[in-house]
Image (tube, rainbow, N blue to C red):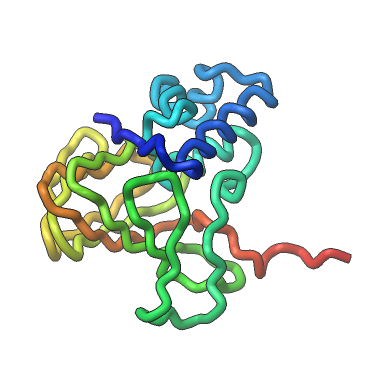
Length: 200
């Protein structure tokens, strides 16, 4: 199942055009980019045309394959404090029906990120994996189906899953209600600006 994008949004259209422009700039075919990103050529084609919804992880895989990073596609909010206040949530602006709220702060030598994911009914995130790292999912509200390798698990409120990111996995909300998940993962998805060398 492929989640359909809202083609009326200028931001949603921009992800596909940026993706295609960079691919053509590097002289890559859909198949070559798919092999590098470990995604299907059909999914990347749909993403370029604004017909499929990339997850944060699939965008990161494509960014690495395109010799850049996640900031090429989105500008994540930059935390300004070690404490995250409920009254001042930080959302990740991304081409997806899934709402991502960032929980982690920006610290030196950062090794993990934490997000709350709000997944609408009927939304399935693409199958992904990363070369290294761990994923931890905890269901705060609702119910989702998660495939991890060749096994499928139904996760309800209070359930959790923890696995290596090298294993193919996805998340599918087949229910009629929005599911809310806490995700914690390594390595970092959003590199800390505190670790960048100072100019000059």
